[in-house]
Structure formats: structure tokens, C-alpha cells
Amino acid sequence: MQATVRTVDEATLRPVARRDAGLALQPKALLALLSYCYASQIYASAQVENVVRRDENFRQLCHNVVPDEWVIRSYRHHNREAIHFCLMTALCYMAEEKVRQGIVAKVNVVSFAEEAKRRIIMAMFLDSVALDGE
Image 1 (tube, rainbow, N blue to C red):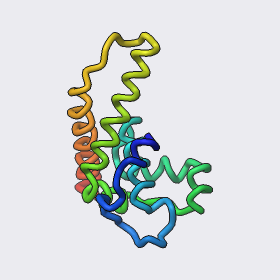
Image 2: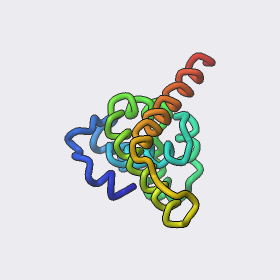
Image 3: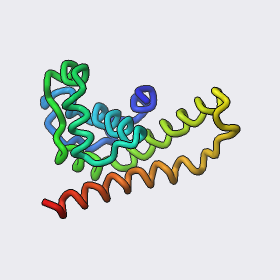
Image 4: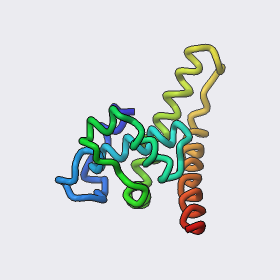
């Protein structure tokens, strides 16, 4: 996933925090985080925030700066295409690993674009439900 994120031109990403806000709030870090979480079926922004908050390694790497659910929502809203690209690539990689392990026989690449889109929509839906409940 990191290799895919590195291929994304940072100029195409819309930041949601100042450049000096810290590593955790930088565009490529958020891209990697959301792509990883959505690939791992962690969708709601509040859940993503909690995962990061509980991950001691991430907190240490980012000097205890944790992107909150509002930053996550905003980032997803402004960078949906890049998230889609990285998530689709991650899903393809995960499926290819299953082929190598003999768990599945073949990979349908076309379906990964739709699956990535579905997962992003799921994240948006869960966030909208959470907002309605507040």
C-alpha cells in the first residue's frame, strides 16, 4: 500500500490541515491510513480515529497527533479519487495473495474498482448515520 501511495502526485491531493500540522495530518499519511482502514473493513471515521488512537506505534510515529473523525471525513470528501485508486490497488494485491496461496483460483480486476467504490460509499453512509444520531 505504501508503494501505491508514493506513486500518487501530492499536488493532486487536497490537504485538510496546515503543512506544519504534523505527519498524521499530511495528505499522503491520511491517504495511506484511509486506504488501509477501508481495505481492512474499518469504515466509520470515528472507528478510524479510535484505531489510530489505540495504535501505540502510530501515535509514537506521529508524536501523539491523531486525526479526528472530522479531519478524516473532510479528507475523504476532498480526496475521494486518490483513496479509490489506492484502495482498489490494495484490494487487487490482497486478492493476488489469495491466488498465490491457493485460496482462490483467479482474480477479476474489474470487480475491485466497484468494490473500492462500495467501501468508500459505506464509509460515507456510516458517517452520515453517525451525524444523524448526534
